[in-house]
Length: 296
Ligand SMILES: *Cc1c(COP(=O)(O)O)cnc(C)c1O
Image (cartoon, rainbow, N blue to C red; front, side):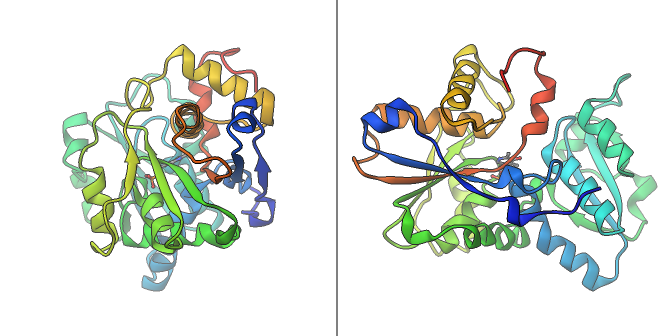
């Protein structure tokens, strides 16, 4: 498998007619180009967890995720690259046919352990593996090592070049990392991809040890809820690609671009703002959509 290539990361312009009209300079930090499987923010969130594992001498990583989880596939791939064993605790009963994501994770050597949705909600670890000597990485790389890793995303752009840094928000780990390194004149803006996740602000504050004021998170662009979508979102993703040649995923970055463009339409950003949108990867998840839905 190919190695992780930070040199592949680029900053691309997104010149949509709307952004030109509103006099906004919009750029996209292409973390999706880092690696086909360990794409985007997941490698950043995993890097210090891996260091911890190496330091402790543990040879096994255990983590959690759903059937199309970017975190599961990234963990499987990163463990293979680092010669570590990987165990994935997967939400729900074992399906008759594995999703592309799980199939690939398995091919990368990850041991998949399926648990019921109830047990998953309680982050139950099955008795059969409880006694094994592993390092646990929380779902989505949530937690302080994840924040510290996500903060290193800021090494890949010049902070002073942007008035706004915008990202999609799941657990809020990436957002917390970006806030921790932002300049005081700069706004870091999160677009939540979950419906009514009202604990988010508090969780992000906690990840930052309550050192900041409430983070700015917009809750209006979940498009029906986590991993849900409507035709306007898909239409927008195709349109965005037509104008910028930048592909997005329907769970995270599609909603980010969709939300930012709607905010721009409603004059949320002052003219001449310079926006950096974080392309956090996740393109592999588009495989769950029907063929022909997206033009890329
Ligand atoms: C996991 C993920 C996110 C969310 O990151 P959090 O740190 O959990 O908020 C955003 N974008 C993509 C593509 C992801 O896979």
